[in-house]
Length: 266
Image 1: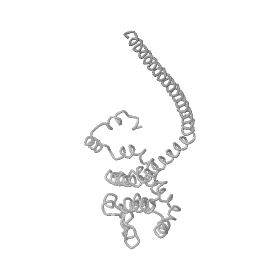
Image 2: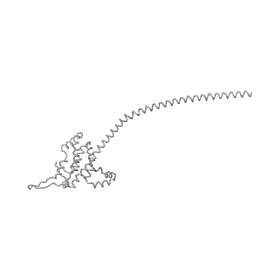
Image 3: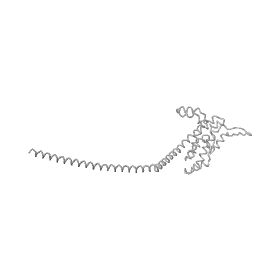
Image 4: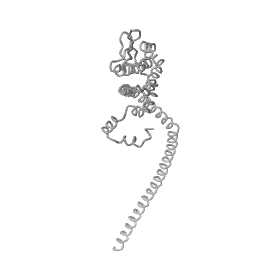
């Protein structure tokens, strides 16, 4: 719905400084809603990515380990989040009981990646990672489906956890850039092959036909030019003979006239 609003198109033309200023006034829920098309597109490219280990490492470091810390194979809530959603403390039969906040417990269980799959990815050769790649992407997808829906009634906690998700998205976009570039190169190669096939099938045959027609036309023109040159050469030779004959005849007549003139004087 937000993408259909006219002001969304206006923001695109604003200077980058104003964009950041406006962005700072947008609440975190609206930001995630605006980013939903980008999230969908990113997930689509993550399934085509081959960087399974990198994706798993990013998820662990930027999501799970930002909420929890590991000690002796156990995960404990980090102090800043524990302070926002403190555990429930009560006494039962004189014994102090401490129960982790239900939401923290939910995140700890649902966001934790399968230890078995994680171990298989880290211990296997890169060529076998494709077997577990979809499981990693599905966990990332589940994270993006779960966190935006969380309402803890602690605004600071909701903001912090959703802010982690947006930062995580920036790193995922960097991973998908390689996939997008590879697909772009593949599309260019396919298009180039298509052009070559079309050129070979349609253009070259036409070029050959036109070339043959042109060669015939050139040969015909050359033949006509040679015939014309021969005619002109014959005409020139004939004209030259006539000129020579006329010159001889004129010289002979002049000689006879001179001879007759000399005989008259005598």
